[in-house]
Image (cartoon, rainbow, N blue to C red; front, top):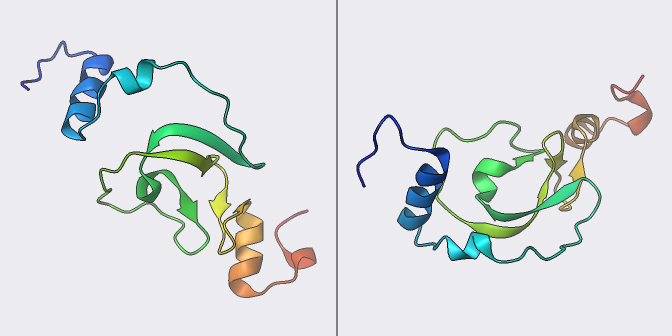
Length: 107
């Protein structure tokens, strides 16, 4: 698919979906409520490598995989810890360095 300067965001998303083998109908279906634990939000299509930070990897990789997984992902200011919970930066620091919680960055 050839892209022009006037290509809309919708057209770019549609092209990306086609490359991933998805149809646009998947995104037009009525949205169901998906309960997620605190600190998480439900996404219909996200790459776990490129969407979430973890306590062990606090930066995103340079090359993201083209995966499309549905599920609960950590909110932008949270990190997934080794137990699968979404925690704050301070909680990651305490976990990574074995710092007691009372000695973290919380004022």
